[in-house]
Image (tube, rainbow, N blue to C red; front, top):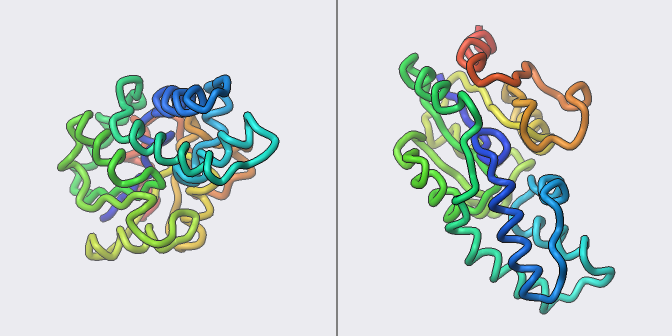
Length: 216
């Protein structure tokens, strides 16, 4: 049995750190910062798209040279941006329960691989997942199904459940033809009913039983 997780907005609430790093980048360019709510709405399609959305929020005109500087600056800051990040309540216990029940666990995130591994190390999770793929691990990222397929293949295949929090994750699961469990307390931008999913949960304590039921 394989269970693959998204990271930001699913296992961890990293938006406060992303907001702080993004606002530091904006300040360096002479712009005022954006709100935490705006930052949450920009998350989901990788760091490159996040910076594009950040620039669009503060400037009516995109400047390629400025955008390149912002991306480089954000990349430097993002790799160690985890002081404000928190694990969602109950997630650690759910991961422990799943591991004890014999699930093999993987991670498929659009977060670049360096900051992904950095935050995993911060929480003592470096050895928790059998396979970890970031948004820059392949030539494509979610919602393309290739990263999810790659994680499953590298884990040896078998019955699989994918767990995520967003429209991007739902589209990825659909494209990959993988059952999808939606964590409803993350960074989704639309109502639960409009996001394709097999099961939804708002309490991590419920996930182990939900995952087992999805493979029955």
